[in-house]
Length: 424
Image (tube, rainbow, N blue to C red; front, top):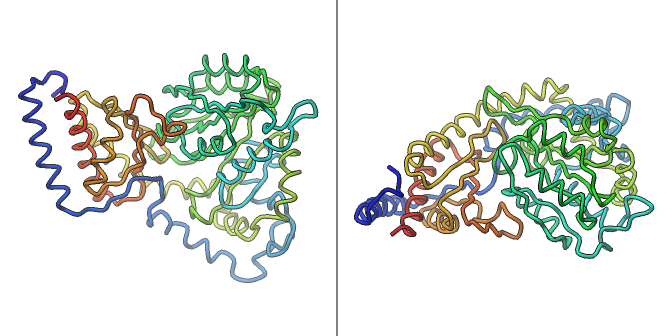
């Protein structure tokens, strides 16, 4: 039943029916959280045996003879560099393994370029007047938080079904020296779950920036996070940039935060030798070396890249029913109303829902009053400014299937109510 074909009397009748359902939900005193993409306890349990992988000092020696309990190993142990080189599709010598957070590595990268020129004939970004950063939207709020913190003007770039609007990206990047970078989540993008097409990756690799020190922040957070039997594939930006002579353009990031333990994983970046030289110059004063014991623990647990992929199949078995539940509820409750649309990703951690224009904030408020916590409306846009007021990020990973099913029923009622409040 399309809401746009209802008479005024039918709108009132539908609204009264939904209000009764809504009050019933409120009276249940629920507390359900879908605000962030947290792994569930069942997913965390998958990696619990890893904590027993290092049982004595004999187990703390890496394959090259390094005692991982001691200082040194600034760039990370060789086993970790090899593993992350497979994930990021980069040469091991161009991989730097850090602490537990790829977000921290992204912050440090921006911070480094703020104070240190990348080339001898460029200046630090701090000294660039009216510096700007491109932000595909909807996107990852913490990315926007980093560039906002460092005083960048953030320019929203529409995110299409195949990736960012490359006509817009190419035009802006080629004409404005004050644009210093772009955020990208190229596979199973947060929050839409789309994967950049081969054409989009090739166009990124072929960019001709006006700013010599323009950089692509390639956050491949969901590189191995498939939830269906028809996974997306992502073209290697490293290989494509080699073909175009733009090896310095991308800096790649990933971590095991949603593979093993969110608060105790391992993160890594990959970059060209030139970029790595600038970053290492800063990092050498920040640390003598990151947690090599944790790197070794992960390497022993997975054994190799194929072992990691086997581990991800266990995650898929837990996550797939949750994504299926979200799709089932959205289709059952909203498809016929024509007041919302949503993505149906093959992986990642999120589903992006566009509700009736101008009602996203109201939907989030109604859900909260009924005991369902969502990511704040506007969070997927720089400075929280979703000018259409319609995008909401759904994070299905943490609740159980039963809790998620109930939460989605409530969400759909709230989407309808918020729309009817406008239509009435």
